[in-house]
Amino acid sequence: MSYPKNLGAIRIAILFLILANIIWGAGFPIYKWALAELPPFTFAFLRFFIGALILFPFVAKKLKIARQDWRNTFLLAFFGITLLIPFLFLGLQLTPSINAPVIIAVGPILLIGASILFLKETLKLKVLGGTLISLLGIIVIIIHPILVDGFSGGFIGNLLILIATVCGVIQAVLLKKLTVRNNPLTLTFWMFLIGSLPLLPFVIWEAQTFNIVADITIKGFMGLAYGIFFAAILAHYFLAYGIQHIKASEVGVFTYVDPIATVLVAVPLLEEAITFPYLAGAMLVFLGIFIAEGRLHYHPLHKLFNREKGLIGNS
Image 1 (cartoon, one colour):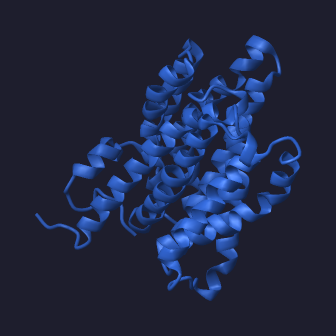
Image 2 (image 1 turned 90 degrees about the vertical axis):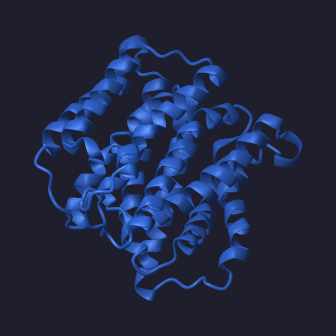
């Protein structure tokens, strides 16, 4: 049996993507917990601006981005930080945190479609059927608050998280293009710095009612620390490294682990309830993803331990 020459790097990439999604999955309830004490734009700005400052000493001698990639780097920062994080935080303030990873789980389907359109990756014949089933599951979760409470904050929160998911798909496609010629850690630094700066006007607006020095609590500080060191620096580096070695259409599959991490944290931390509509919607989402993927070896852990040539995507 023959093996790919870069099998070691692929295995590390898969492990990093699993770890990144565990961090992000656990982060949803932690953010919701901290957002009770910390305004969303201030939280988002500090998380990534401080993250950029921490990364700077590690990339100070390799800040160069290929000239033809600066436009996409700005777009990466705009969609991956400036838009994605505020939409996610605002959504988490309005809806249970356990909804977030299930809504975001539709990302693999969207990412496959985007990869086909923009990266010319191979079309999967079962994508359409799986997409429709997954979207049905997302609709169940998103509109459930309407059926119970009308057009309440829960519906708006779910919708904002869905918009954040679309931003995340754009981020993954751009990262795939950019990591071909650029260092992942350097890209992470520029994404954090460029993406956080447009949030400043909103931070100044929030400062009228919130003093970061006087008003921050232990809860806010702990959420911010987790967001900076784990979810921002560590997980985004894991993502940038992983997407360098894995097909963009396959990166989204690692969001399968997010709901598990979210529930394990959300239930004891926030006492959130797992309802029947949530379970029904989640089952439809993952059934659709399974049909669209069509092969058992796309499960993240199976990919990590599978050694057969050709089963692990590489481009």
